[in-house]
Image (cartoon, rainbow, N blue to C red; front, top):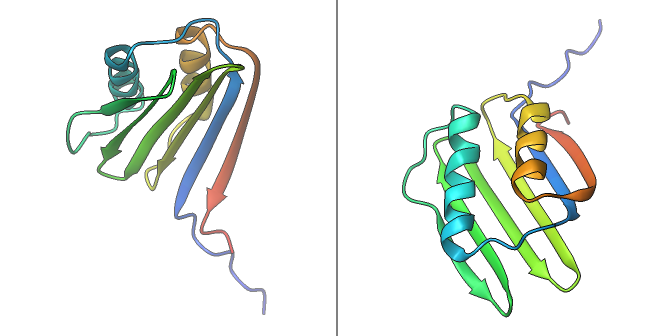
Length: 116
């Protein structure tokens, strides 16, 4: 008897690349909120972002998990994570983030969680 594949419990999208602009703390919060809206995800509170050295880190908790970002000026790199138990389309999310941050050398990986 074949064994059924375990159910998909979530998607984790990782978007890494060189940034062409370095947002302010306020700009990072706006970006996090815009990503949540783009994907139809409900935020449980306002996005939070903080200075870390010369970079910016931020997150927003969503009903189905979280969205986070780490932006560093030297080298000018960005790391954005979107994790959700609700399925979402990774392509528009990747395009939106890369356009907003004017990213080059973009790497996008999706990990399906809960697949064993």
